[in-house]
Image 1 (cartoon, one colour):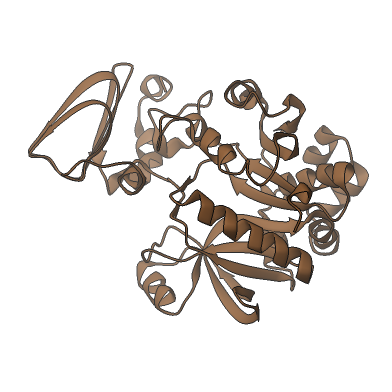
Image 2 (image 1 turned 135 degrees about the horizontal axis):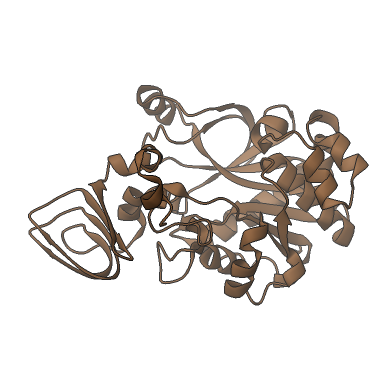
Amino acid sequence: MSESRLWVVVLAGGVGSRFWPLSTPQQPKQLLPLVTERPLLVDAVDRLRALAPDSQMLILTNAALVDPIAAVLPHVPRNNIVAEPRPSGTAAALAWAAARIRERAGDEAVMISVHADWSVADPEGFRRTLRAAAAAATEHESLLTVGIVPSRPDPGFGYIQPDGEVEEGIRRVERFVEKPDRARAERMCREGYLWNSGIFVWRVGDFLGEIQRLTPEIAPALQKYPTDIAGFFGAVTPVSVDVGVLERSKRVMVIAGDFGWDDVGTWGALRRVRTRDASGNATSGHVVAVDARENVVHADRADVVLYGVSDLVVVVRDGLVLVTTVDRSNDLKALIDALPAGMRERA
């Protein structure tokens, strides 16, 4: 299909508390150089620029992040950086974005929705999958989601059960499964389930039609406030797009993606996406590791020496040092809630 019809929507709100103490409300996860030397958001936009020009990219965020995002993405038009007045769930955010795209390009425009804070090891494979999804969404007038071929039975993800094949590589969705326990995740991987990545592709007219038909949490607000962003976000009932649209629709299809996708959800995840040394240490900054294996270190303007330790996460920022294990880095919210207010608010 013609790529002139492709639009990209990047969801770039949120704080990313699991990357404390580096992430802050003013510099959240998506603005941090966690995988490469550039912020995750910059990497996300650059890998999509071969699909859509800057003028056809919308960045959805919150008001506090508009200026920082504009600073790292100077080529994206400022009015394409959309500040949501309040967090209202992904269904509202994507409905608002789809309505803006329809205004500019009509119902036939194809919208690709991604998050700002992922890692993709094979960008060209990623783009090939999105092109195939866009063609299928147009051909079948459907809502396409990209299901990631699992590399491990991870209970931290939702899963998609594919159903019958519509065409080669495109299948209907039987159901979505919320985060399972490990035993169930292992079983689903054996049975051919896919990870629910949160990558969506659809024509804006098809998506807005399903919103109107299936999503009472959003549809009345969109009708009443079609161009009033404050009125719209103030009137919606927050709901995720998975619950508010995809789980209710009979028009959802899935394409399998296998391009080294990772949601970079925790410090421990950096062992999967960063370049590692011969002992498996993933480091950033001035780090010396002696007889040390499988550690994650982020040293911000500090020297860190590791000796005889394994599976640690060490983060140094402005005189504050976090030391935990890779496993416990999955649950930093519990730590942050337990900290004295003064220490918690330093980040």
